[in-house]
Image (tube, rainbow, N blue to C red; front, side):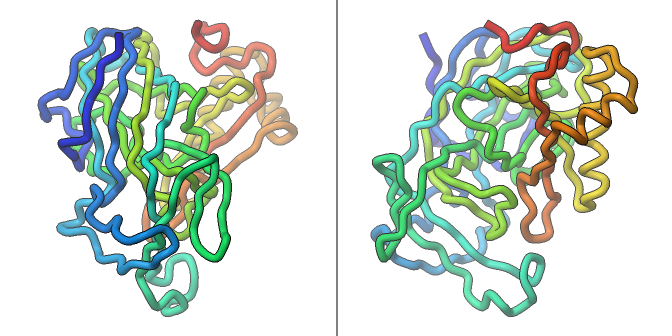
Length: 309
């Protein structure tokens, strides 16, 4: 029996004081209805048309659904969230605007959105242009005492904008407050690494997740696990700092699980690891991920033996 949370309320911070929309026990399945970042306000017109792209009112963008309270979760624990399904709304939009961060200032003169139709495995735009749907969740995180806004990234998760956050992936988040208070939002029906236009195909969605709790596990920040990859993350406005975070976390995992030295671990990272960009747009913190194959002894959590059953 799953719990269902509708999209009637949009939140804009990973707040620990917002009343939970649902309270669940570890092991339960939750269906979460998410909004597009502007809560449908600018999703007008037929697929293929261009619309104006006004700034969000009061900076309120990237609406979140939640929070979901998890019984027994306490700081020092880890929440794992398995994405079991993403059902897309029939329409979404692509957006483009720039203030000189990605391309020379003035090169992109207009702020526009393009309306997209999501169906038959493709995102359909205009003039026969279509491309594969690749549903993913842009924002996933737990509450933090500082109530970070939506669109931010930190130890609690947040705006990872990582294309791996999709069906079949588990996201591991260090719990910051009692109850964890999980939020979801910013689903894309497709997005490229870098999110260079400051958006993918933004769309509402119904997301099905299964939530587990791992007691008394130290975690410096979000990690991901796929069928064939272990993934650490880093974030900063400075590329070197974000890279250092992702690599150092992976080194620690390899040292502990594989029982090898840091220099041996770095050799393997250089030979088999892939450092990829999640988000690198505007004046926001970029997000990086370091993907490693499932080498013998390399697990996402200390003492684990692979994907939970």
